[in-house]
Image 1: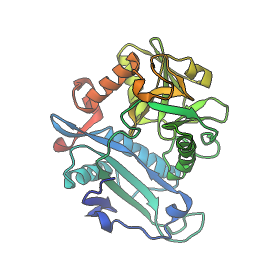
Image 2: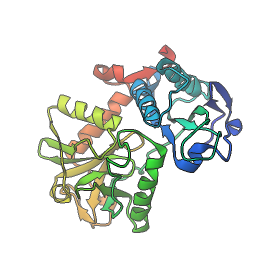
Image 3: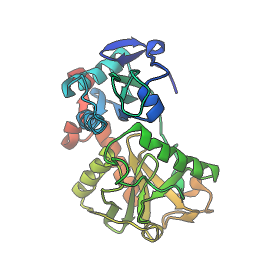
Image 4: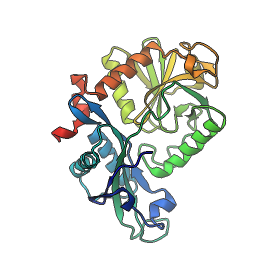
Length: 312
């Protein structure tokens, strides 16, 4: 991770090393923070932040699910993100806003704990690497929708994701694939999941998954390209018999999947453990290429998805 010079911290841009919290901050002990992951891309018209408004709207929603009324409005949070990348003179980067309960009292309820907000940004490449992912179905189930608010992006939820990801990497795979409490596919630790069969894309329905903003964008894009998109329960059997599978997410963007538990997708070639031998399926390839064109500002149809820093 490459440190930048400044972090927006409680309304001010401060030096990276000065953005500190108290060791007894409530969110450190109880996971009560809301956060976002946002990407900014370098385009011919200058740096552009992908779905800035949607991400900040979800940050506000997630914070409210924890009882937080943020001390900043949506326009103020959007401006703060723009100020952060501008001050750091970034052309492309990952942006991390976070809202959390600071130090007040160390008890489960955040009584008398101040609400604090920070936004950091730094250069970050491909989250899962440049090669198609080799994934495995893990034993760590996705959190139950009646135990936690799965539609919110809350830091405590990611203990579940970390355990799933560690289970996968300890077994030599790139990433995990989690099931929901019904035994159907939910998502990856930090990605939504799609399967492709012919001209139809299928993705797990909302309920046990995070409603990803990249997921939502890919659904719109795929339909615009003439594909049928279905949201329903997806079984492991469905995935193993699919033509192609891929992940979506802010960090992962559109990442092809080479194999599931060493069973290759139909478009794969070579040995089952050789991701380099995988030829990205034609649908995944098209979706990924068109998605990246949008993020680079090369498709005016989706210009509204981008916030150009110079125009803000």
